[in-house]
Length: 127
Image 1 (cartoon, rainbow, N blue to C red):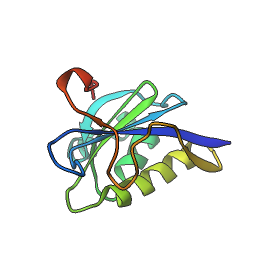
Image 2: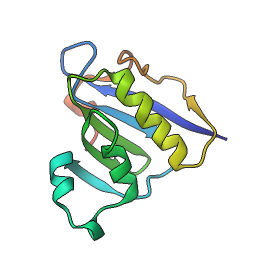
Image 3: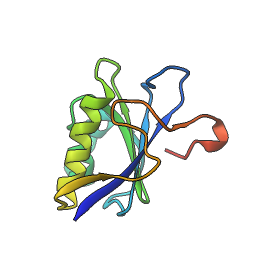
């Protein structure tokens, strides 16, 4: 089976946007988390952490995230490219769900940081 995903970048008036990307997926996340940055997560007690969140924040360049029903939002450091961060993130997600390959769904933005963007406040989803 394949891990199926669709990328949507947030709009920040640059191309590529460095502020965030939504990874829409056809499977639900194992842990709902509204929003947390890497520093705040490190301060949590071990029993308040989840391996899914830890794995995503362990990806080089990921600085913040949220995991909501059928989607993950991540923010990256501007010194990393989207291709670097998303390649590692998508491989983590593929492995997490025990899938054998990645499948980009129609309408997805590209890993390189170009494509579909949420361009207004009305289109932005709650992180």
